[in-house]
Length: 354
Image: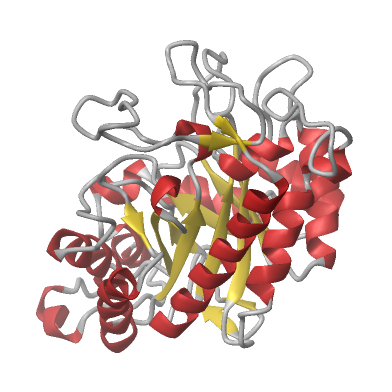
């Protein structure tokens, strides 16, 4: 696995291998605070040799949560709980750890128990660039004013400051899957007529202002990733050509990598799921925008991951379900070819030898 277990550097952050734990919601927080479950969940992947661990979508303000059980980083108590995880990863592994900063927008206020949108009384008021619900059964979201948009940009900046102080190595902005930043990008969810709507430049303005605010808080010891939906599988919606154009601009804004997923903004979109189904999207962005990319989506074996890297389709491999199934995917995958991968010294007696 020559490429999969090779190192790669973003700014001053060196990843020991190309395996990334993709952000995945765990719906296990109380008041946005990480607990013992989160500690074990993330720490175990570090012990398993994962090159980069990225926490689940972490809200920059209370309304930014997808569900009432999602993580947050809008106050110091939340940041301190995450800092404990970061410190363990740094002190007990070679892994780097990132945080995905997010805002759910119109897709928020979901009950983790019922997976349906809660009332304002039980949950919170949802917000969006335009008063268009995600599903017809959802409440109509509040359309953001210009002042409210500026406040949200500031929320992302403050969240980044807390994340940097907590010691995170990578900041990833969640601009995919139909959450708030994606809602601004798409002409199907953003019908504004002011400077945040209309043409592609205006629809991307919210993201660009967030990127600027985030970069203002980085010290040179952190890298910046942006997750996008390469396409939203809808007529007249966001397409791969839009993603390439956006990536070209983000490259000039000191964004280090585009994490390319897809879908999530249009209810009922038809998506053909198959192994590596999103890899061509990452390849298109990498090739046409000349920026590093991450590939994600039903990548389940080291051989599959290696082939993606060898073909130059992506620079990092983001694993989701497979790394839930096996926290030790990285180190176990390294044994076959004798690749160099972190292994806890406490477990050395169990390490296979050739």
